[in-house]
Length: 417
Figure (cartoon, rainbow, N blue to C red):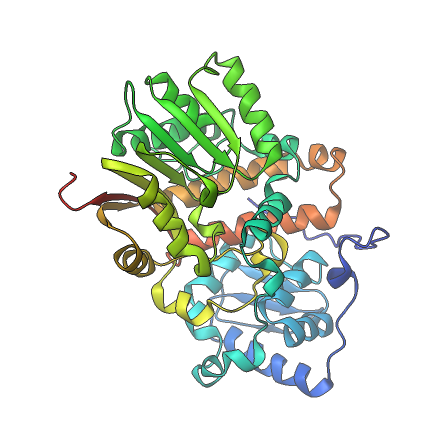
């Protein structure tokens, strides 16, 4: 799919996008250094990069068109990858194949910044603001900034299951009519791994819009589901009532740290990414504490390479600033270490589905673009629409490149399986 190369109108009378509308003040020297580093990286990549009206660099490949080179380099000088994303929001660069360009960059992420500068990352890279820490109060605010945007917004690009996590397809390429079935397949697989059936006491950490809880209740389980999003809770309850399962499911506006009781199974789908490294021990201990003897915890998580996680764990990113405040993707090694150090749980099984997430994101991105007018009708301006398209493309590229994976972990106590 191609994205439009038209320049957006970034006039912002509401103050929503101050760092997009306002070009950063940065010294000529710093801008010149940034330009030299960026050009040095781009000439070695399989991209076709065009600056302004004429100059081109790169080895050939997807087109990255820089409309305003001065603003582009100035933003990168001031904000690194945050500036790169904001420059796209402002329409200073674009790409007919945005996913293709971002996939090339993701494939070469470890080498874009010279090793000497990587070692000095703490001196030049912005650090995560302490205000985004996922304390009980901070986590509520962070979750609400994303999931309480609008149920109607999410409904425009999700399928009828309202499932906002990776599907599991039978084959590729996937088509939109198959997405709901692929989401049900993913949910059934998670419930099977957790051995959910008649009479199971299930705790779900991270409700979404209720589809997994509904699937578990249809098997005869009694479900307690936790969320910090009032918007999600309200719509999940509507969907649960419509399914006639209100007697088996209780959706609570509750932090995982406040959960009580013991359960035969605990399932948490793409929730750990929002917890923050500081609180991973607390999160996994909560799973351990809530799990009855002989029970299973099943966690679906987006993961990244351990060395990249270590290198970037303290860095403030574009995704954290605009999409998921306070978030950090774990590595498999980090999950293994924290469960070994802080819980009685061990990984009994894990399966990766990164290619399936790439397809899921492609379908969401295409649907979002097709319904751009409906998104605008909800009150979301052009900068938001470019931001959201960039987020979906950026995420898809991470999975297409292999930089990201999504995995299902089965956690048990020794001898439980």
